[in-house]
Structures are given as structure tokens and as C-alpha cells.
Amino acid sequence: MRIIAASILFAVLLTPKSLLAQSTKPDTAKTATNTTPATVKPGYPRAVGYLSFIFNTVTFTKDGATYNFSHNSTSIGFPVGVNVLYSDKFGFSYEFTPTIKSTAASSKVSNLLFDPGIMFRFEHGFTFIPRLAFETSGRYGFTPVFNQIYARTKYVNYFIAGSLPTRFGNSETPSLGINIQLGFIFN
Image (cartoon, rainbow, N blue to C red; front, top):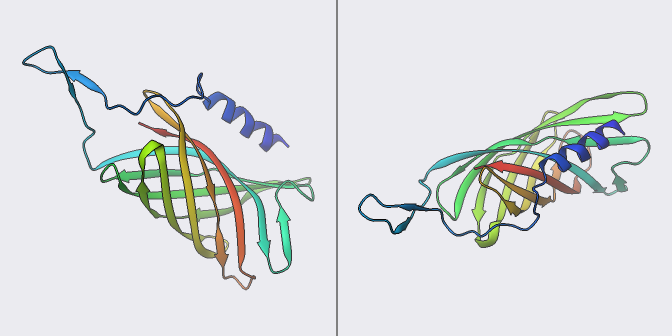
């Protein structure tokens, strides 16, 4: 329960004053020869970091559905990553996600996930990232991620993402999950 409270506090502290995204118009700067603003485009390639937290809401296997927050057990991941942006349309993302599992008896880091992926960037802050997945638990697979920036500030962009982790291996049945992720990207 403490992990949930800490996660909610984390989200509230990171939430911008206005939940409406600012305009995506490029920054302007005055030119040296006149006082008319000139459009300044970001240079590529460039790297940006991000922090977030992720909840697995449900996982499906051939044996049925398993819900997070059930049976006195809760898991939360803390993805940390770097996005290398090559253009307005394309990039590459490197992400590490330690997962903490909390039960009535204990809490511990239960897994570390490395999931790199190609970023397909679209207008209005939408990004699709098909990721590979390699877990220290012995599982592997892929994770399609659907990411949307919902608020922009000068220093950070706030995002929400949905993902469908598909896992195989480690003598377990294949699984498909549904995750929700909240976080911010440093500009």
C-alpha cells in the first residue's frame, strides 16, 4: 500500500499546473541582422532522458487472468531511459525497468527489464515504440508501446503510455499483459 501511495504522490508532484498541452509551435529567436523572430529547429541527433512509473493492470495466460493489486500483492515498475532522436519522425529508445513487488510479508526488487526499441514519432505528441524485452527473471519477448504527450512545459513533457507486454520462456506459459505508464521526458 505504501508503494501505491508513493506512486500517487510522485504523479501529483510531477503533474503540471495545466493539464492542457501547450502549442507545438517551434521556438523563436531574434536574428543577429534584424529584430524579426526566426524559427529555431532542434538539432539532430539529440538525446533526452525520461523517468516514469508503470503498472501492470492485468496479465493473460492460458490459465486465465491475473490482476495487479490482487491477493495482497502489488507490482510497480520504474522505467528509466534515454531516447536518441534522429529526426522529428524517428528515434531509438533504451529503457531499464526495475520492478518492485510488495506483499503483506515483504517488498523486494523482483525483476529488471531491458527493452530497447525503435521510435516512430507522429504529430501531436504521439509515438509508437515496438520494443524487444529481456528480463532478469529469464523471460523475453516484445512490448508494443503507444505513447502520448499530454502536457508540455519548457523543461519537461508529461506523457501517458499504454503497452502490451508479450512474454515467453523460463519454462512458463506465454503471457500477454496490459500496462499503464505515466512519466516525464526532459527537454
